[in-house]
Amino acid sequence: MEDLNVAGAPLLESLPVLLPLGPKELAARIKESQVLDSRMELGFSAAHIPGSLSVWLSGIPSYAGWFLSYENPLLLVTEAPDLSEAVTYLIRMGYDNIEGYLSGGMLAWHTAGLASDSVKTHTVQELCAFLDEGRTPLILDVRSREELEREGRIPGALHIHITQLLSRIAEVPADKEVYIFCGSGLRSMIAASLLKRKGWDNVAVILGGFAGWNSTACPIQSQPNSQIT
Image 1: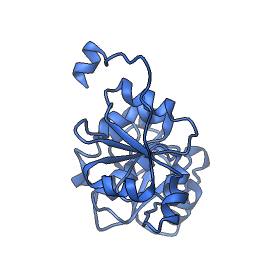
Image 2 (image 1 turned 45 degrees about the vertical axis):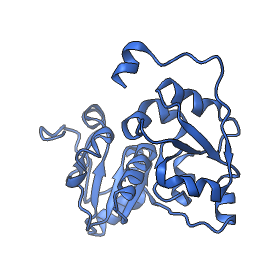
Image 3 (image 1 turned 45 degrees about the horizontal axis):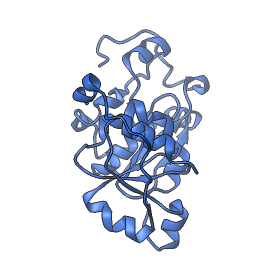
Image 4 (image 1 turned 60 degrees about the vertical axis):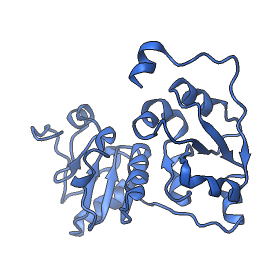
C-alpha cells in the first residue's frame, strides 16, 4: 500500500470484465481466495458466505485495505447491478486479482443448497433496555478517538478503533456476548465479520447511534477518558 501511495496504481485503459461464478464454482475457489461482501449491513447480517469480509460498497476505499491481503485472489458478493464502482475502488488500491463474483447473489447460493452464516443485530434502544435490565454484555466500541471525544463514550465499553481490531483481537473476550457499536452499524458489521472469521460466534451488531440512547443504568459520559486508545 505504501508503494502504491508513492507511485500510484497502474493505469488501466478499461476495467476488467469480471467472471460470473455459479455458487458451487465460487465455493470451490474459496479455500484459496478471500470473499469481499459489499452489500449493506442488514443484507450481510441476514445471510452471508461463511468467512467473508463485510465492507459496504462506499466504504471500500476507506476500510477494505486494512483487512484484505494482496496475496490471495478476491471473490465478490454484491447487490449492485453494476460492478464497476467496486472494481474501480479495488483496482485503485492495487487489488487487481479479482477472480469473479457470485452470480445470482445469496439467493442463488441458498438455492444451490450451500450453507450461510448470519450476524445478530439489535437497535440501540434494545441495548439500552438490556443494560437497564442488568445484563452485562461486553460492548466493543470501534469508533475513533475523535468520535469518542465529540459524541461521548459508553461507560465500561472496550474501545478499539476498527483499523486496530485484528492487532488487538486478544483483548476481546471469546466467552462473552460481544455487542459491537460504531454509531450506525456499518463499521460494526466489518468488526463482526472479522471476529466471526477468527472464531467469535456470540457477536451482535448495534444499529443506530447515540441519538436514540436512553439507558438510565448506563448514561453516556460526555467527558473523554484518558485511557481511551
